[in-house]
Amino acid sequence: MWKKNQPSSPSSSTPATSGGAAKPQQPSAGAAQRRAPAGGGKPTYIAPQLVVEGTVSGKEDLVVEGTVKGEIRLPGQQVTVGGGGRVEANIHARSIVVEGAVKGNLKGEESLILRASGKVEGNLSAPTVNLENGAQFQGSIDMGQKQG
Image (cartoon, rainbow, N blue to C red; front, side, top):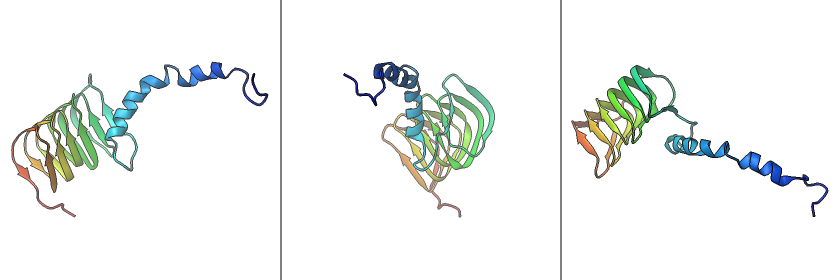
């Protein structure tokens, strides 16, 4: 039944490699990769139950599904406020995507996208601003050219 150069019990190795340990990690990795920039790795993730108060700064992309109060300064990086994210802060980043709620001013060095599920109360500043149908926005928009 089995060839000599095949393992004698392939079914015993199959559950270990495709068992429960790999499956729970897939949704969170998939969500992070979905928001990751085309050429980069996985972003830093603020989970739904986390509350961060103060200044968030660094050199990694960020996905906020929890709450941030203070300031987010990530020039050169992408910031995504996920559908469950709540931010009470000014945000300065290379690109900003809002799917949740933000109360504060947003400055995107390249682009700013407010998804249909997003809500922003504050001023937007970026060379490219995209407001999807259904997005809620109160403030002003400055689409001045990118500063070199």
